Length: 606
Image 1 (cartoon, rainbow, N blue to C red):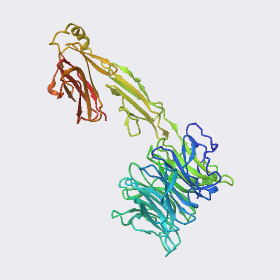
Image 2: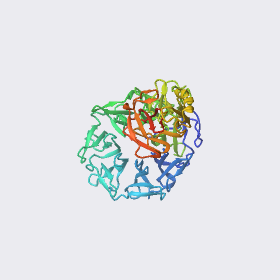
Image 3: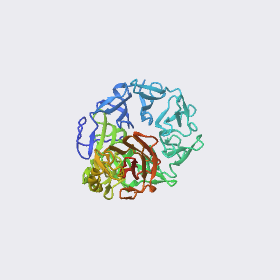
């Protein structure tokens, strides 16, 4: 079966900077004389693509490359398997971010699992085959998202009937243990393993062969999950019941990341009319439902890949397209919510290709495809990515700056139909951040960040604007002269001038012409620290409330505020206030024998 993906006119080894289109991921300098079993996966920490493959010039031994700092670099030694590495598969440990590979060693027939030790720059054996049956086939590797244990699903060779029967094992830290019952299927021809993110249960899809002509399940897909008792595998669906008639090949099984619905893509062959087609179904409300089969392909197509776009959470598939003159050239399609649409153009590859693997860059949301291209007499590795148009970054009106009053900020983008997402707590916005719908009121010093996003486009760069709000206290202007005339008046504590300097509140007391500081710091979503620095040897009190207090003739209505006494005299004081409400504006002031501050505010974070 062949799959391809190459944009016509792209010169391999030259990266392009252009709007929407396919381009090579750097200069692909490996596997150029021929390769097999290409796999792509992204390092969850660095978002760098890794490619595992079997290299022809190295007797089809296993090698892994990664794209970093603009070029492809080897991960450990090339050809690190003892013999050829059949059924090579690649996955990352989500806890340690280490790449793992699993394969069948052609020289020994053993199933081998290895992980990359970055410190030693070498591939370390996790299993040397002693825990697996010799001569196994049809391999799939995945990690339990809760325990981070690697699981391997494979066809275990049975000496009694010479069948390859489905078996799953997990690595517990020192040995491989069978998961559920072993050898629970008929004779396999393919198998795929995944996990339900809702409950971390493993699921399988596999196809049984046609070697037993009287068996109605020959050539059918089985979808199974580990039963609640964890000792048996129970059937979710069998081909010929919920799934359509005909023979199935190359199943792909993936959970939708937000609804946790199970999606299945596979090749379906109907012998009566000699047609091959790619089908996609989802398991919802206890039954399988077709995902718009009619719009997937115009002619014969096989076999599929399946992955979800992390930006839209919609499924994407690629397949070899045999419609008209495409002759096995590749097509990528994305589901829009109602039908499938081609990404780019259909049938883009230069020649038929095989060993296709599809994955999305978690950061840029771009689809990446690795495959073996049949160009002339060679079968080189190709790694391509689809570069989307980029949404225009939002703009703010007014822009950031220093203002003496609250501001109403409007956001806009020149990308028609784009959605703007924003934050006001300094964090980088994502598609999950607040959606902009009307002007944003900013009354305190705030950093506003925003992005524009649109389906089928790459998210915009981040707009960042900082608004410094210095609200003028006009009543102080009336008191300035009074302060100068009352410096020797011991009873003039209510006359206070507030100066603002570099965002810190300075208080000039009328009694001894001393300056003090008061400010809120270390503000979180449920706590804040009020700091007070004033005359040596003085005690002080702090009042705060989430309700605006009444100030008459510069006197505080303290009944409505919580009161804290400073424990001892001194120059510098601080009070840690906890148990606050998140995203709430609080009012506070400090009172000492020398005077008192006006009422200030701080706002807890979200």
